[in-house]
Image (cartoon, rainbow, N blue to C red; front, side):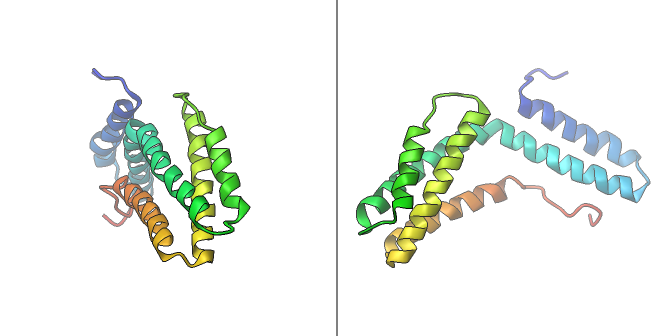
Length: 155
């Protein structure tokens, strides 16, 4: 029985059923690989479902001041960075709908890209390093989404 019917819990239960009930009963290697891939996708979706909105909000909150600093610091910063910052600020939402938050996250990602490009072009090592740190945090979070990753068919 699912006592906490969140999307995360439903997906975790589906992944567990695939892992514990279906995979042990399979002898066909092709079907086993398919189910191993499905189980991994379900597990990753479960983790995302439980935290994705918060993660996007955290990243947006870290990106905006960085972009603002680049726009304010880099002499003759390309208008792309300033325009992207304006788009991010005008695209702010209090909506809790995933599509709306994803759009805001996309705007923040574009602003980060433009700001990092401007800091690189200006040769500003400190701002470039700060931008790279933001990208590394994103990469690390994506890596954390695959805690039990394995190559299906090779386990």
